Amino acid sequence: MVSYKLAEGDWMIGSTLLYRLGWAEGAAAHRATTRIALVSALVASGVGMLISLGGCGSDGTSAVTLGGGTHTEEKMTGVVYAPGGVLASAQSGWSPQFNFGFASAAYALQGVAPVGAGLPVSLVLLDSLDFSDGQIDSPKPLITAALTDDTGRYEIIDPAVEDVNICRKMLSVGGGDALTRALVFSHETQIDATSEALVRVLLEHVASSTAQLCDYNANDLTKLLAKLTDVTLNATGTTVAEINNDAYLRAHNNPVVQQMLVDLAN
Image (cartoon, rainbow, N blue to C red; front, side, top):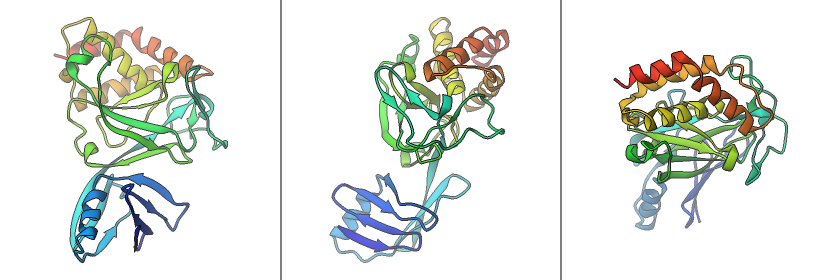
């Protein structure tokens, strides 16, 4: 194990290709990085270097400096919300160890709270042909387990999140009837019943029309999500399955949403 003392914390490099950052403001966090392989190779070769890791900026980036040159990596982040902060299903259950409080008044969807720490968030790349039959059967895994922190926030710093306009990446949490997904078209992406409703109505519309997933660009999806945020505001449910289904039905039965799906695909 090779250790470097950094201004922002300790960077531990080992065979597991994981680094550990001990932030001054709080507890240590574990995060995976593909760039660590490069650093390990430099260390193994005995090349002298200066390593510094800047904290994640408000613009959604993180800067890594190797030997004086700086490379800026994009960051994807967001909060996972569920009824009472609990995401569970009959097949697979998860709930926070502590009660971290309900979502603030600024958050639109009612009756939900941020989940706690340790919930794995995955990132996949969708295939438009696979999407076209109304089912997602063979997504390409990109990131398999970015864990939420104690405020329900996940964070991914990886080249896989640099381009949010490529058609189309998707985040997901949970499984079985608690599966909750979010299409990616911004570096700040919340995962909740509204984002799941957007996935469902798009799957439904594409399967029943000539529209394709890639007909909807980031601007189109932003407009749709804004409308669904309004439509699903009062969605209810004591479980993830219940609130996800209620949000979907409100979007499915809303004529404005259905017309937008038609108009934005043209």
